[in-house]
Length: 230
Image (cartoon, rainbow, N blue to C red; front, side):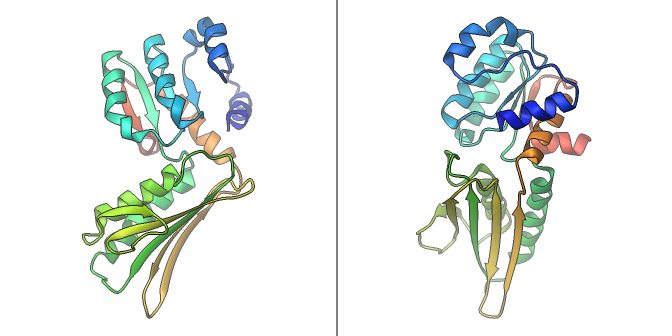
């Protein structure tokens, strides 16, 4: 993703002042990082939050496409407010996926009164992805939980399907990302699917978010906020 973001930035005539891949780069490129107008992070769950804190301390707005850290969101909000920082975060920066989120919400709302349907979800990603299920799958599951009174939580399979969204996470090859939500009844099956054909859509969404963020006041914004404003 880092290479794809770099490609999109250059295509849109932005200057890249630093590329940071490890702790040594942070030390070596500290001055360059501090003069950046905005930073884009597609790293790993274990380093995403420390990277955000470094950006807040350096007064560099940050767009975070890394998933698997949202259990620390309130801590991040506080640190961002204390530093008068700016942050955009999202479980998925694809415009198509964010439309898919809305379709999933509507379908779940319609299913709230249909007790013959059982929901299930499957997500497939490349073998390099560290978190499972994906942040996108968790986002989809939480929206279903919010809309359907009988569903209380999500669980990775194998699990008891009673009152939960069962999520199957598959890691294979170089799959950019596929998410399928299925509602199954004895009479029929309803399925919605989003399939990414590559990673450029995620990179383009992140760059759009960065261009939007530099014009905003301090605060923590979900990615969908920039879509609404655009």
